[in-house]
Length: 370
Image 1 (spheres, rainbow, N blue to C red):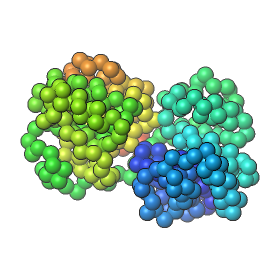
Image 2 (cartoon, rainbow, N blue to C red):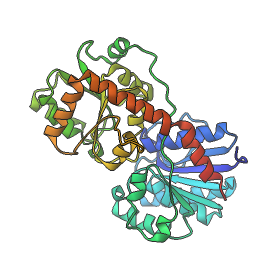
Image 3 (cartoon, helix red, strand yellow):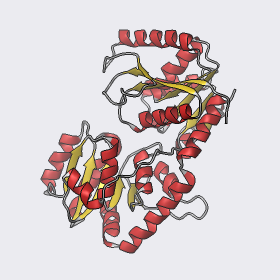
């Protein structure tokens, strides 16, 4: 076990997203291993996670003004000088650009950025700032959540690329305590019928339109979605226009345990994302041994493809190809042997490659090295 260290994780804002979940997971586990690790949110966007005892929030403004952002930076610098951590790790672009610049100004010895999504998905200004800081001593190293994320920086300067390493996700898996029937009843889902579960905010990234458009061609199946966001009203209108309102169910934003209840209620899992880093929801579905249909993007393929023999723990469908999605959904819906085959493979992969212990071992190694 590494010698106890004082560590601060800096992230943009409070939310229920995968990056926030991952940083809090790292902090909880590092504290269990004897390290003093806190999580600092630059501002409060939602009420999520505010009950954790080891967090700080530097602004209550959900949309900080430029003046407030300057004040936030000054507060962070003051807090770092008082805390005097040995390491600062930043999550999300604003978290690691602002957090690590503040750490450098505060004399923090080790400064690490954690890339949770492909670099190509960052805003233009953040890409420029990150590229500059990453090629200078402001960043000592960078942890990517997947090899696919690391490859997204392939065109960056060598001074940047040489600092990149990969630590895959692992999750604190706590399956639902309910039976399938109980979970369906608790969530208000039909007692009968084949249910595809989807978990994720109704935003552009999740690409729900392709799933909705495929549902008229998957007779007898139900799509249940946990998540809320700016595209929900548009998606609901699209569902109504396609005449599948009785088979596409929007459950809205729910807590983490209710997401796991949905996995228990479901017969299969779907995720049509345009991009991911490495999806926590996919890892949970793998633990639940659900057959999956995922978008065919490098991040998903890396998670469900066995690197030794190439076997895949699920079906992959092109991002915007509605007929291909309908075909994949129908295959899973109609073939019990296929469902068993891919779900067993997925569960074996997650238990072998993406454990919580491996994730925390990787972060501990990087966060405590000098």
